[in-house]
Amino acid sequence: MKIHALCLSLLCLTGCSIAPLATPNGGSTVGRGETQVSANLAPALAVNVAIGVSDNTDVGITAEQQLNTSYSIWAKHSLLNQAQGPAVALLAGVFKSGSGAHSRGYYSGPAFSYRSGKGELYTTIRYNRVYWDGYDVLSDGENDELLSIFEVDDDVFYYWQADVGVHLHTSERVQFSLGANCVALEGDTACLPILGAGFKM
Image 1: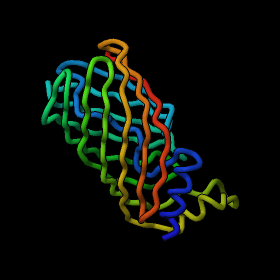
Image 2 (image 1 turned 135 degrees about the horizontal axis):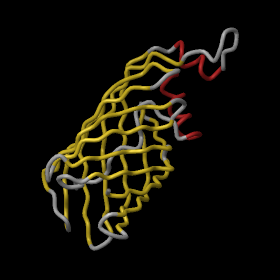
Image 3 (image 1 turned 90 degrees about the horizontal axis):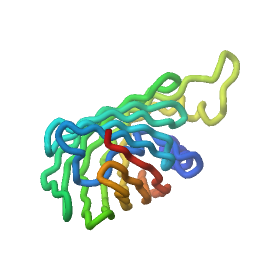
């Protein structure tokens, strides 16, 4: 369907996606009673807040700027959680678009990481299910051609997302993230850089 090709084109050109791009990466958690605030410049502008409800479980919220703003709540549970060495977790969340668009859905998948000293390699794989009803018109009598294509293509679809990169821990409370975010949609693939930072309160 043309909505699929269009979504992938938008991803390449603007860092825009239907489901959130910037969700937690890595198998480790922030820790019981800890709060981590993260900000991403790429693959999309996003702010993420993670709260450690136990030693192995985080819950959080994400706000991400796409063509409009997308909001997500999520949970991550670590099956293997070590300060140094390997960590493995399961991530799941739901999302909904803000005003001006009509989409919602959920995502889930495993997250892996390996920390040695100040460096932490990570890989996160996500299945994303999207219930898409299109964008609103810009105004009465004015209709952007790109948004019109969205509006007529009501759809339910899925895609896969893989994040690969490294967290650089400059201290136990500050980290910087670099990597690549790749999306696979009906046989097509697009990748964007990951650039972000996090701070434990």
